[in-house]
Image (cartoon, rainbow, N blue to C red; front, side):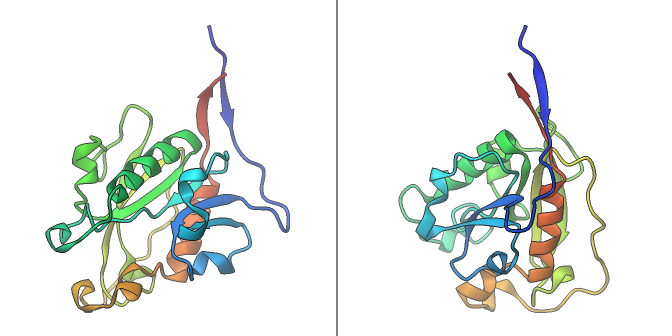
Length: 192
């Protein structure tokens, strides 16, 4: 019988990465956080083979509620499936718009539910973290023993549909920091 081992990563030392951020924007806030190993398009996150907990921001335009207006490039939708595989393999969190059809295609748990690999979905509003629009978001999380407190209060009135692509896709710094803390807490059960 194969031994099962929990991998929990020691806190990163100065200059070391604690989490891998997959599919980040080239000018992402994550670059300002020293504990992040950032994988923007220029590094091609599909080459990530490490074992750090991940924060995955795969392209969502082929999965979200405005997908009928989107023009994803060939193979772009598969990046989200790859991202789910990495979250399950390494632990961490995948961020996508609330109601993303990725949940139906991969039978991911709905907010408040969990799946057979211990993954669960949490619903948040990025407006509580400084985004100019409410930006309702689902997080698929694997390996976190608990969820850090989620800010609440009044939401901004901006509309994502009326924003430019860069602002729509921007991850607020407060949200990036919150996701890093969440991912750093993750541990995953691996068969040895």
